[in-house]
Length: 407
Image (cartoon, rainbow, N blue to C red; front, side):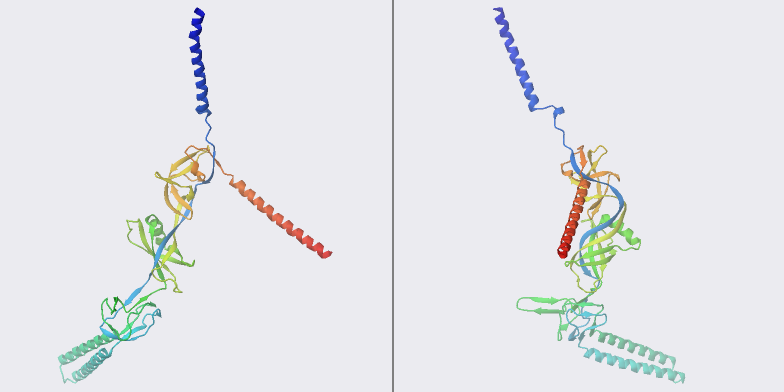
């Protein structure tokens, strides 16, 4: 009786121990310990060393062509156009006659004033002769001289009024659309001619517009971060060069000649103008162009490939490989970018940075260098083998040709 009682008490204890053992084995199977966890695999990356060198500051931007000189031809007097001496689109030179106005009245006034001036001058000459003979006083001579000067001034004014009837080009350039024709009445002011039809009224603001095309200017903007280098180049007497890329893949080279005196705070950039040769007149004002500005160089800059940069909400960062082949994500500052490279600060020259394979990296990850050199060597060897095989085949073909010839 006592033996049965002891067995009944031992049985639950054994069952409990068995349950605990099974639970421990299951926990160890489904939740392995940290020591037994699979280690993070080593990531294969491509790295480069940070280089310290002079970095050419080449900016890719867009701009608009503008004329060096543009003149709207307007009359200075109210008159009728008698002749148009040019054609639309014609090249004119400074001093060429563009329009002739009705000059009959102005020419008559000039001839009348000139005759009066000539007569007054003769009277003055006679008075000087009479003064030498003591027939008149000095006061009479002075009066004759004043009258001669006054009439000559009136003749000069009449001559100026007559010159307004011949309108000449003040600059060398191309004439645009002509808005007036022979017989049209023109007058000074912004409104030269008004044409009314059944549907609209059109007002022309100039008789014609003359535009200088050679050289032509290009206006664009550069970021304010490039101003120091730009001004340094101009101060040294070396005007920064620009290269225009036109729509037909043509290129034009020019030079910067002016930088605006204030920065546009809304975009953080400043206006710049460059002058470009345009001897064939194929570029006209108002064209949209792409251009490259060589704004000098940044001395002793830390340069890395642009694809090495990591940009997120924390700013610009870069993966740096340590001596133990583990990576660290370091914050940096990007000063400028161009041509696939970036100038940065925040790391030291000679440090290795990750260029390719950074998408799967985490700080403290272990990395190894990709076997790029071996692949290149293999490719070179394959190319050399293919070249040798081609040479052998060519030699065999030549030998067979010779054998056939001998036969």
